[in-house]
Length: 518
Image 1 (cartoon, rainbow, N blue to C red):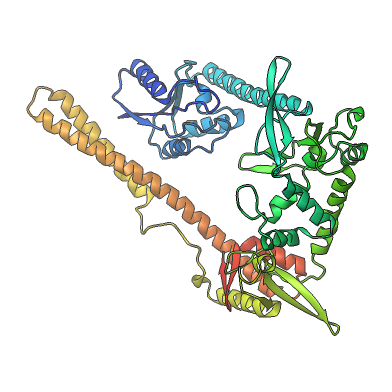
Image 2: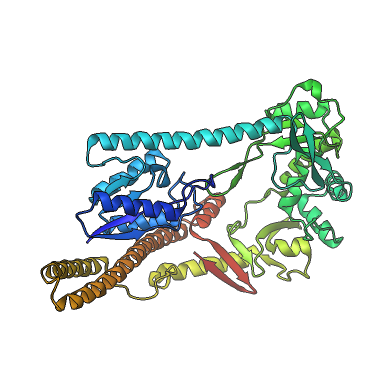
């Protein structure tokens, strides 16, 4: 049997690109022409609709590559090259894998033959153009958004707290602009008043909870939300004080003559979207524009609030090197635990405490303050048990039981394919014989068994890779546990903490019991 894997994908950017079903049908029609002398079995990998072609993190694509590596396919076929890849380097790596497993690659739209040097050259050129098109599209979108932002327009996204947006006609087009919402801006003014009174952000969070102050969504504000409001330039007056402040930070600014003190500002480029998530950008990468909305906070007060954040951060920073579990220890309620140190009669006493309890009171969590020595002694005791009984330390595997080996499945697949080939040959010589219906039934039965084996092969391959990774991780963790215990007295506090954070996901304190999760 000659197996062709068809990989269709509808563009994430355009609604008018060919549908998945159309791509599949065109590939089948094309295959019936160029492989007309072969008995073809199609495998369709069509679950990536809506996934971008700019990277290879796509479920059906990963399934396709697994089958290529397991020698399931003879040909990989796409309607168009950019359906499978838009990155030259990734495409080159993918095609090298195809060659290693004697898998041909066919694109219907471009109609090239990968068995010739010219065909491969054309393929790489087309992949390069696909990547260039994607990068140019991304650049044009970014430039357009930046141009809109520089002119004070609102380019979309989540509205800042206390703000709303309005549509206004500017020339021949309508654009969105920010405006102050008189009904909700009180919350922003309250937060700035508190920070200027000397409240650190954690105490502002506690103050809001104690006084029933909530966001527009009806939820209590957390420290991250408060910080984002305090640092947002949208509330700042566009005076010359603000101009020099942002100039010193290295921000991109409009002409200084526009800073007349009458309007508010807008900050763009504060975050950058990456492959997995949004990443906050350094303030030097910000673009500051003049909005049409009234300012909320005078520039001098807004700048003073930024200075207060710096002071609060200094108070928050650790004064003493204690608490080797900082960053990994959590309370039973799920909140992070921090360290607090007291000085009494010339002696220092350090405790772990629940941040939920600190911010929201004992009604939220009653863990209390627990001496560092008590928790860390229990932690070291558990590490010693693991050291002397490494078999008792195992990471959790998702394996549901003993699975057949890949070599035995491949051997069985080979035998099944041989049986199918023999039956097919017998059918050709017994077309008019009463036995033909039996042979066809047997071929269908063997083909179903073949598909089951192929599915099992994928599962076993993935599980073997996972088990190998788990074994390597277990060895890494165990070796570092031994190193920490052997050199505990000579490793500095920072080194201990960094090493623990590398090998441990978290420690959960439940009453007097400490649970270590690797």
